[in-house]
Image 1 (tube, rainbow, N blue to C red):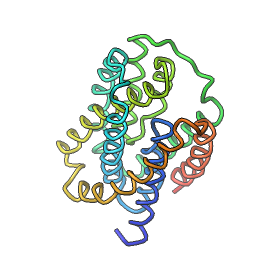
Image 2 (cartoon, one colour; image 1 turned 90 degrees about the vertical axis):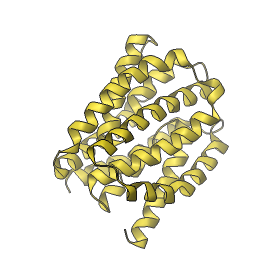
Image 3 (tube, one colour; image 1 turned 30 degrees about the vertical axis):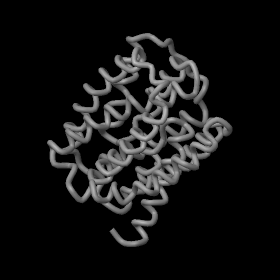
Length: 241
């Protein structure tokens, strides 16, 4: 990776760290909108998965006292099943197909956030949690970007901001650990990926620190709309790449 590419990757991780601290999710889509331009798609997914795991563990630890285990368990059950299958199925997929699929996913995420975020409401039941976990696990395994499905459910289930962010990141910590193990098993996660992720940690921590300063002050809906408007443009670019 060239110096310019490394700097852009670090900037994307800092932005992703900020977004995930404020919104509870979002590092994956932000960084995945950048990394596939500089490295093979499968490696980009593996690196972003590790970086996302680092951010998830930081936030889950910060909000550990607010984690709702009862809400978490059915979501994790669905997420572990789906992420395992998604990693296995995407490992042998053609890179161009996966890039275009990622473009479609980014476009869908941006449209959801801009036009439907906050309007969709679901009941906080174990069945709905399992289904949300399945959907998020699929996106996490295939694209390292599974935030919206599980975030919608967590918003309905959580009593306050800390419970929402803590439980959401506890979910992603567990699912991303499983996804990393399966990528190691399939050979899509290698030692250089761990090294690159380690190099990105300072950027993630900087973004997280800045995001924490505004977590209880900034309206996350406005930030999310701005981020996903950018992702719409990136998704269209990847789709026609």
